[in-house]
Image (cartoon, rainbow, N blue to C red; front, top):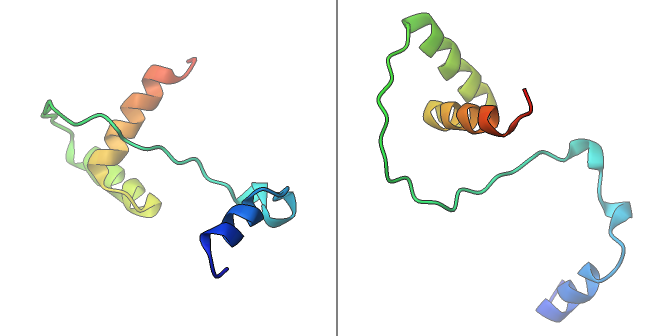
Length: 77
């Protein structure tokens, strides 16, 4: 597309043919500033497992832990 107008016109149409819903992944955006710090102690094997899992997902282990805490507070069980 050569202009913003072309892009806007493109986005006005039904994009179903361009989307593969099987490949969608959930994305979250962090808007609140991180104003408090928490220090945790983990057994070495647990921290190693957390770091490995976070690496597989391509995120920092701190973000992985924060996401796990947030998920535990928003899930139904």
